[in-house]
Amino acid sequence: MTHNTQKKDHTISREITAFLIDRQARSLSQRTIDYYQTNLLAFERFLQTKNVTAIEAITPEHIRLYFIHLSETCKPGGIHAQYRAIKAWLNWWGDECDDTNWRNPIRKIKPPKVSKEPIPGVPIQHVQKLLASCDKSFNGQRDKAIILFLLDTGLRRAEFCKLDYSDIELNTGAVQVRAGKGNKDRVVYVGARARRELMRYLRHRPTIDDHDPLWITRAGTRLTHSGLRQIFRRRAERIGIPEPQIHDFRRTFAIQSLRNGIDLITLMRLMGHTSTTVLQRYLRLVESDLQSAHERSSPADNL
Image (cartoon, rainbow, N blue to C red):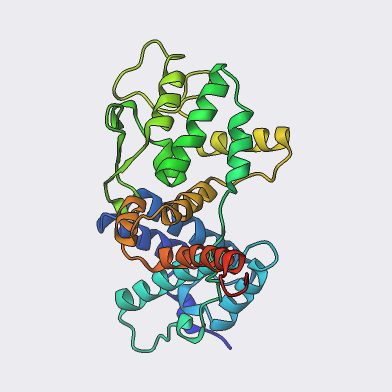
C-alpha cells in the first residue's frame, strides 16, 4: 500500500526535533528531554531500516517489530521506557497535526508487560564487604563515603553526581537535591556515620569552594556516571561479589528504611516520589520478613 502522506514534509527526524522543542518549552528537565531524545532517535534508526521516513507511514506493525527487535538486547523495563517515549511523541503529533484522516498507530499497541515485583537491592553483607575493602587513601576514603552516602540518602545516580560542596550542611546532615526527577528540589539527610566518613574524604581536599563538586576523581574533576560505575565494578571484582548497580543502593535505602520503621509518606518525600505506589511494592518484601520471623517463633508450632 502506497502512503500519499509520504510526500508531505512530515519527516520523522523533523517531528522528533519539533517534539523535543515542545518539551523544552514546557520546562521539562534536561534529564527527561534526554530520555525522549535517546529513545526516539533509536526508534527512528530502526524505522530507517524499514524505509519509513514519514511519521504518517508508521504502522502498528512497525512498532511491534521494533519491540521484538528490542527484546533481543533490552530488559522489559527498557522496552516499556521506549513504549512510553513513542506513545508521548505520537500522541503529541496527533494533537499537533489535527488531521482527522490520521490514525495513531500506538492505540493498537498494548504496553509491554513489566514485572511489578520489587528488586531487593544491595544485600547488607555486600555493603559491609565493600566498606571493608576501602583503605585510608584518597580513593579508599572517597569510596567509603560514597557507599555510605548512597545507602543513607537513596539518591538517584544523576542527583548524586551533580552535588556541589555547598549542597550539604555538615552539621545537620541536610542535603539539598536540586532539580531532581521532574525538575523538583527536595532535601534528604545523611546520618553521623556517613558524615564522619565524608569528613575524612574531604581532608584529602585542602581547598574547596562552595560550588566545587562534592565528588571528584583523583585528578580533581567531577565524578561522572561512568566513573561511579567503575568504582563499584573494581571493588566488586576485588572482593568477589556481583557488581551492584547504583540504583540498587536506592532500593536498599527504601527497604532498610521500611524495616527500621519509617512511614510511607516520609519515605516518599525523601525519595522524591509523587505517590507511594512504588514504595508499596517494597513493603511486600518487608512483610515477608514478618512471615519468616513468625515461622521461626510461632508459639503454637513450638509447643
